[in-house]
Image 1 (cartoon, one colour):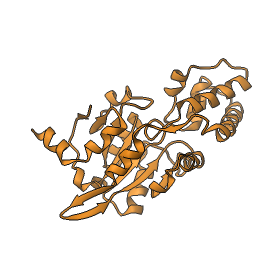
Image 2 (cartoon, helix red, strand yellow):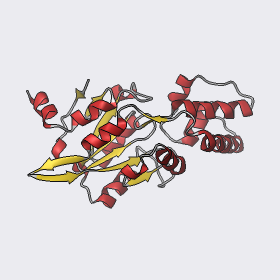
Image 3 (cartoon, helix red, strand yellow):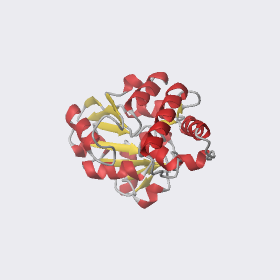
Image 4 (cartoon, helix red, strand yellow):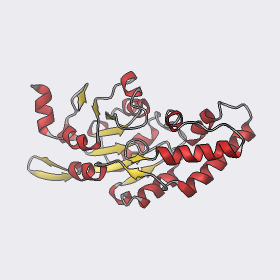
Amino acid sequence: MITVHRPIPSEQIRLLIFDLDGTLIDSQLDLANSVNAMLRHFGRRELSQEAIANYIGDGAPMLIRRALGDPDDGHYMHEALDFFLHHYREHKLDNTTLYPGIREALDAVRWVENNGRRIERKFAVLSNKPVGPSTKILEGLGVRDLFVQVYGGNSFATKKPDPMGANALLEETGTRAEEAIIIGDSEIDVITARNAGTWSCGVNYGFRPDTLKVVPPDVVIDTPRELPLVFTKDYEEEFEN
């Protein structure tokens, strides 16, 4: 089901900026396995997959800090983060997949008719995951070529919800903020969209859908297969009626 807080002018959207984890890919198990491998290595108690999912979204350093209970020892944190990143680099595609319907949804929204002209929309990824594994995962899943750019949490001096990455994508693609939408599974993506002046779409199938109730996006979808409906005249007319 699509929940509409503010209808999106679908025909004017030229750039779709996607979050990665919990939006395009289901990486929860591989992330949890790498976190727990780190915890075992340091003699710590393992965490449930659900608990770890709640820690995802603010980048690898914050994920590890939360998993360790916010330790004061900076050297310990550095070693734990290094272990996690090394383990995750080796195991990032053990179980990770595209969410069912993502590839079809991208195909369905790529083109838009405008005044008799067929215009191709652009796709980009803006994640707080480091850019290296982000790119490798998309390559491994066979979809990297669908995106004009992939940025990660270490691509800029700041991470989402700072709009630096979104602003860079707008500038690089020659897109106005009102012609772009950020799609993600948490309040971080919604706040990023607000900070950048773009539209926002939340996804309830991701890791942190509860946060979308706290910071509502313009539109919320329950499954990837609903994404194309957000970009149709029928959706706009149904909302207006």
